[in-house]
Image 1 (cartoon, rainbow, N blue to C red):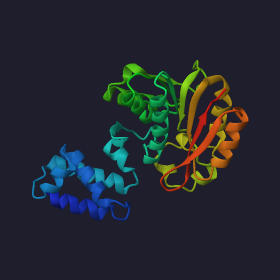
Image 2: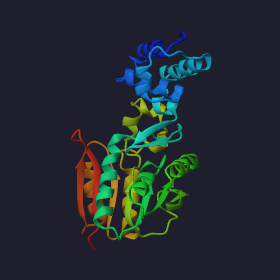
Image 3: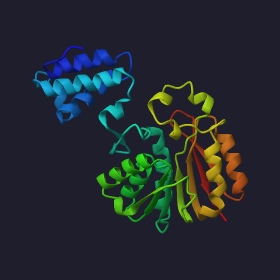
Image 4: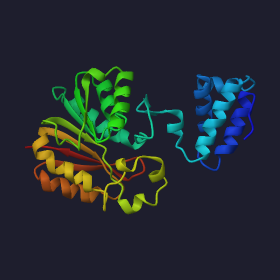
Length: 284
């Protein structure tokens, strides 16, 4: 790969290199170059004649090469944006995705409607996107965030500190909520929900941690485990939110009604019209 000497040349090199790999090669290249230069995308686009020094050029070329070799852009950058905030990332955690914002909206709706409900659990926190976002958006809540991966919890801790909510986000290495005492007013869970056989055919399986993706034979194995604990962990008149996969709505509804038959249960769809969020409002 050639070594560009100006911002404009770098933008063109990156665009050409990433066209076969990305639907947004221009944007991706701008983000990479902005990261290298420590400036905004607007500055990059307005200063195409600016010179790059050797260190900047080499760093940029290395980052583009990592993308060409199959590494996900957010891991190359070391961060990704979620709900208007930047979250630090490593390959130890899933990349936060826009569809998870539907879970945030369901949680915010509940917390705003019932400001006296303050005890929140985030199960399978990963980089801490849900836990940190809720703590930052609603300053009077306390969040217990769990994950099996200690490496993921270290990233979540960094993000909680970055967004000044570490004092209200308790991070615990746990299998779901097994060692954690409830009950909670709100339980949020973005657990693995891709069926094992389906996952094996997806590129994401080679790029992101499979432990955070593999939901077992039908994608619902781990979700069912947490559902079974809700009678003991979810406060009366509390809410539980589970991100689910395409086509899992009916199965998720039936499973939740089995464990909490008197609850109000619904499945909300994402902007593409796909099953995305299981909402359980406990009424007893």
